[in-house]
Image 1: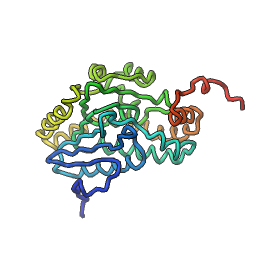
Image 2 (image 1 turned 45 degrees about the horizontal axis):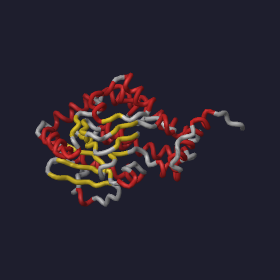
Image 3 (image 1 turned 90 degrees about the vertical axis):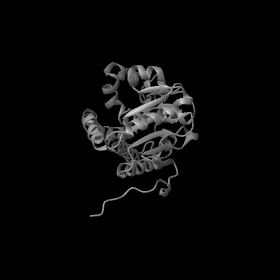
Image 4 (image 1 turned 60 degrees about the horizontal axis):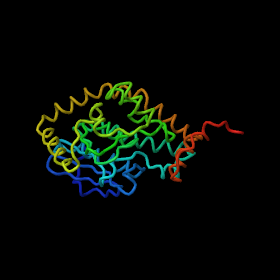
Length: 280
């Protein structure tokens, strides 16, 4: 039987991500800086393919995930795409959510240690990408924020399942219900990230952490990750399929329409409008 093999990074014709393999390290960059590295359908598909290749490449011992530029790591779903292609279309949203789930599945089960290099704002589904990595190093001016409850969604692709495990139940509720910004120093204090450094030292700090991980036994690392993932897998598999269907149907709700339209029109969400009863 011929098993699939890893490919040279330069052989991939990626449009929305950058992929590099150097020595025992792979680096994946979400490369849409003009839209703060938000995730559209093509980007999700490319991320999945890159993560798959990292998993297959026996020479790779660690992977770094980051965003292009210095403004954003990732700001979650591309709401412009959602408005154009998914708003009021449950079937289209169901497919998009499936691609998002598959990326998390691949990232969590990649078999190599993963580091989130947090180079800018980490918002919504972008924080869920952070949570799917094993470790996180952040520049000291980074902010982290969940926004679903303020924008017409539910952070059910990792945040609702894993934040209670990482920061505790009360902190998780504060993050998910209040939707407030969390500065890097506070995120470190809460255990949401592992290390905070001055922006100018971010790459050095990531390099040092990568070198430490490269110099470990790969099979032992892989099985350690498998064991560590138990509670994450348990909560994930109990909830994510249901969430995919519920969010698809909820895509028809007035809350979602108002949240996305407010984003597209660059205005605040009209929460009073949602609270008023529908005259119909």
